[in-house]
Length: 130
Image 1 (cartoon, helix red, strand yellow):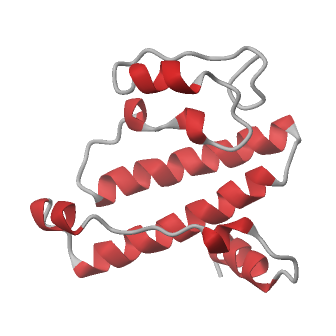
Image 2 (image 1 turned 90 degrees about the horizontal axis):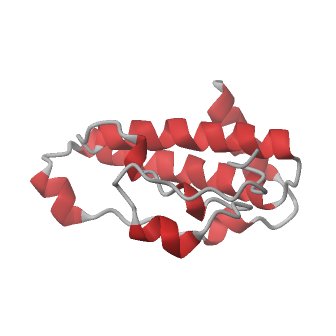
């Protein structure tokens, strides 16, 4: 069993309620048709969203800076894979990093410059700061 499946199974078996179960991911069917996404790739996209939600849940219950940065890096890799499956160029300019749990970077400022290459970073942010 690979590491991601092991982690997901571990979280699913947890006796404590966790947040990822309440997150719902829907697939944009118009984009699926426009991008000519295969059924297999739609399944992969769904599974990656579930896995991404597991990592987001781990971030929500963790306060250690090193752990949070590690989990953030995993989410970045998942986001790249999602871009590939959607047949988009892998580009971190289109990752909404400020939406990650525990991110303290300015939300509105980063939304305003989304996709431009400019980022507003809070130096005290556990994920992106110093």
